[in-house]
Amino acid sequence: MRYKYAMSGPKAPRTFEEWVEAYEERDGSKYVLSPGERPVYDERHPERGFFTFYFDVQKKQMIIPKMCGDGRHWKPLILGVLARLKADGLIRRIYCFTKRNPKAFTRIFGGEIVGMEHYCDFETGESSVGWFIAIKE
Image (cartoon, rainbow, N blue to C red; front, top):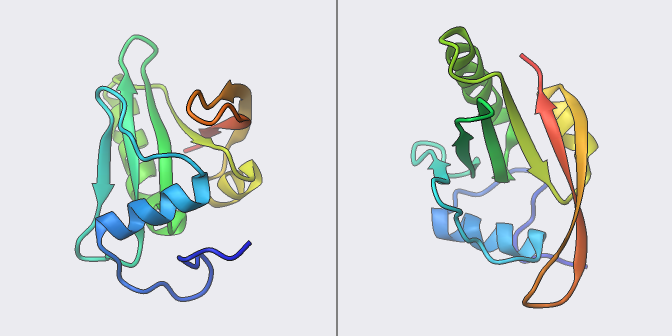
């Protein structure tokens, strides 16, 4: 399958909207934010993509449900947030979620696969599998 937006090799600068299109194409779903979910996009580095996050205050967790682009670029920011909020006692862990190969996340961020979820897309009727990865400091 050929994608409109290549994910390997040198990345061209893209607008946030173009990154969202690339995410939807790769993920096979619409980009919809959950309540409290926030996007992160660095206009100084438009070739690096974006990610989204939200906090589960009761469980003291930060969740990264969507990421598209260069995870290595975002790693220092994400690990910095983890260290700072963990030191302040506000969160215990950060979890990433992916429907793609979870080994890529564990290779880039470190961590371990801690869960798998089966779910159904109610619009298409297709079922999928996703993995939760706990990021290590």
